[in-house]
Amino acid sequence: MNELTHTNDQGRARMVDVGPKEIQYRMARAYGFIKMAAETLELIRQNSMKKGDVITVAELAGVMAAKQTASLIPLCHNIVLDKVRVSAGLKENGISVTSEVSCTGRTGVEMEALTAVSVALLAVYDMCKSADKGMIMEDIKLVEKTKTDIR
Image (cartoon, rainbow, N blue to C red):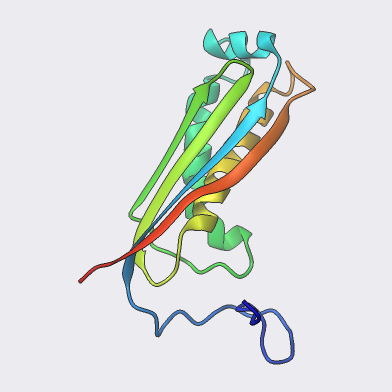
């Protein structure tokens, strides 16, 4: 772990060359949570937010974000994604969001999974900010990352 993969010999940022790597099945799962007031949760549960269906919009925003990760994170590769699944669910004191992203390629999809969760949470925030000024996004993390040989 002494060598940084995203820097050149002069210490400047660079995109890693993944061309020589083997093509593998790659999968990543991520998680995040947004705390909010009970009254806000009830509005979401009743689908009474002024901007519409919070859960559906958040899930779609997460899927769209995963597909745009390379445009958002400077050193990420453009990856053809095989699957992006984002699920948002009401909990006792907020909304949890999980993502699962997979591809068949030369580099992992953890950034796509984390981006999906992050943007889904931002969409919840945007949809609910008029009703709740105290929301807190937290606990965004990579839950699992795998790579499996195809042969």
